[in-house]
Amino acid sequence: AQTVTQSQPEMSVQEAETVTLSCTYDTSESDYYLFWYKQPPSRQMILVIRQEAYKQQNATENRFSVNFQKAAKSFSLKISDSQLGDAAMYFCAYKGYGGSQGNLIFGKGTKLSVKP
Amino acid sequence: SAVISQKPSRDICQRGTSLTIQCQVDSQVTMMFWYRQQPGQSLTLIATANQGSEATYESGFVIDKFPISRPNLTFSTLTVSNMSPEDSSIYLCSVEGPGGSYGYTFGSGTRLTVV
Image 1: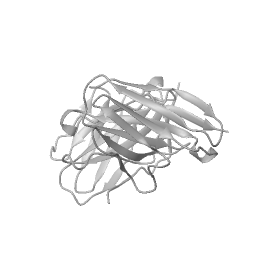
Image 2 (image 1 turned 90 degrees about the vertical axis):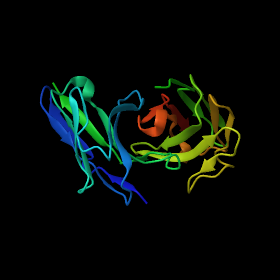
Image 3 (image 1 turned 60 degrees about the horizontal axis):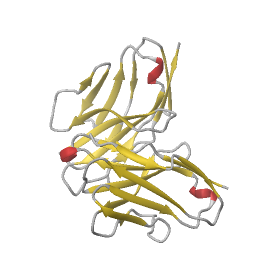
Image 4 (image 1 turned 120 degrees about the horizontal axis):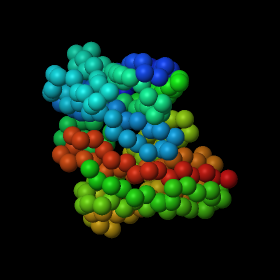
């Protein structure tokens, strides 16, 4: 069974600085998707960034980028120029490829605090 | 991506009663997913709801406790039955993006407190 591990329960970053959140996963599949979700106190789960495993190029969305290391089964999220609005729980998630692999498998999350 | 309206946003319920949570999607989707997020925890899949067939439940979740309806391709309900304080959680519905690769869209969640 696939598992997702986030080893940092809490992280803190100074406003305007850069922070990296770690995620590792375990799977025997070769094709899959990886995601980072943000959950602010409003509870809304917001998709931050996604990565297809077959793509070697790391995904980037504005201030958010990932370091995807397929062989190491690592998928870290880098947040540049951190803003107060980035404070939230961040969840790493895995999804198998294909219609039968419908659900997301989540890590336990990392609580990010942003200091002004 | 799809837009999901989830109701209620929160509720406080007496133990032994039931609560039905509704999710309405603005487009037709094949599968809808129901998750539970216990306090301070990650999301755990409860069941997958397909239109026209019974929901598929994950290990540890049973239909008698969490009956699900899926009357059409845009709507689903999750009922939390015979509630106890241990059922106090956030419940979220979710649908898959086009082709599965765009991630999932989530409802805004229902914060349930059982007293």
